[in-house]
Amino acid sequence: MISLEMAKQLKASGLAWEPQVGDVYAASSASPFSAEATTVNDIVVSNTDMIKKMGRVMGLKGMYPMDSVHWVPSLKAMLDEVNKHGLDWNLNKDGFQLIEKRGMMTRVLKSSANQDLDTAVAEVLLWLKQQKTTE
Image (cartoon, rainbow, N blue to C red; front, side):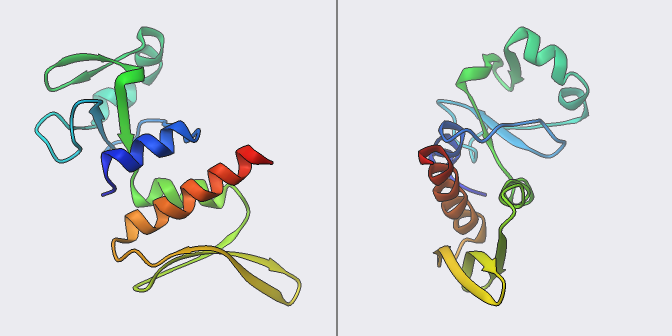
């Protein structure tokens, strides 16, 4: 799982959240590893439209405004976002690489050798999102 700080950076870069069962979210003051971190369940997913209208989501200690809640994206969610950009990638024990292929040519656009694979993907995804906003 990535850090809450990295989750905040991804949110600021424009990574959107559509709640899925098993997702983790936390209020600004909570750590994803604290007792205040909450795991999305079927109730949250089935009430996504209502949550968006209310602008609040339930946590362990009450209701939180959506703008104070930070989703901690899963590895799958981050890879799904990378895939939206039409680039190839390589994930292995040495880290994560974002690859561009043009004909027979292949080049690594960005890589992270972070040993925590979730964090490695998050670092590259953050870079990718920042590149898209500067274009």
